[in-house]
Image (cartoon, rainbow, N blue to C red; front, side, top):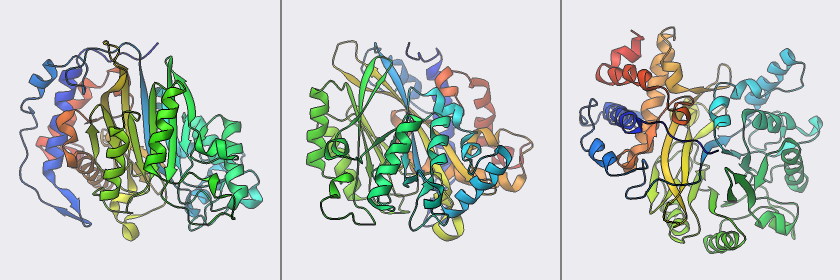
Length: 442
């Protein structure tokens, strides 16, 4: 049966919003520097939140009655197997008697991914069926070992967008091999195909008795495919995507999710093109969620009608580092969406939104749940400062378009799913009032 949110959500949301407003007031990243901003509202109480919550039965869906069927989605950012990531996987493999082992990299966030009914990633690399074909240098031409696909499945991913600018790095054979590996491990790859029909068709998922269609497309590819095989990667054409979303509805889809690989790298403000594409898709009436990839930094989450767009999910796993591409490229979010059915039979809509700020620990190439890490009194003081900076950048990026005002809240671990964690929030809210609590662990 679908997950039911625990009683007390309004109280928890008020605390979360206080954290968002307090942290956002501490400063934001602007051109690589932390810029002081005007003081924000009292983090002890977000004005108007309780009143707004009292007017809605389902958090985040003003005016809608409690839904019948419902399910959850976890969406994450780019998975970029740079050479250092592959080398680390080889080192982990020595301990587990494998050629490569990426599983430890996902271990800390796997429980979050596994708690979702449908978990979607952006796999920004081909997968090789033969270790001899692996690109150990990674960028600029990726071709990761099949063990990365196995790790994604082990972490709990059900689907990945495979339509991105690196999809063709290993040519036609790489597109085919990637889908073969994903098929074998049970992860559905969307946006590429071995036949024209497969490339242009959605991947279908049935979750909590709801039929979901996942479409994906990219703005371009780095390596041109041979003439006559360009169809293997779905390129962004908004009119065509809208038509395919409507076709999916006619074929039985009750919810449609679209992954788009577009935007300007390292720019924290969505481009005009990103916004216009998302708005057109969500305004079509056929698309419920748009997930944005490629920019490698966290960008705002916006509600448009009953749908939601995550403009930029940042990096889930990569070796991009602060000194070269800016500190924001070490950040990411696991966006958690609840999709609910309206009691009046008017279809499905996004009824709740939360996000888990993440950070890549390049000393281990492990994806860190930032909030959980900050909760450890034993955390190294220097690392604590780094993680506080990551948290502030991520929250400021997400709420840039006032996502906090309509209910997108930061969370940690599986608290959003199981309703636990209320007591743990008290410490974080105290830390907002007194940053020294977080910075020193006192």
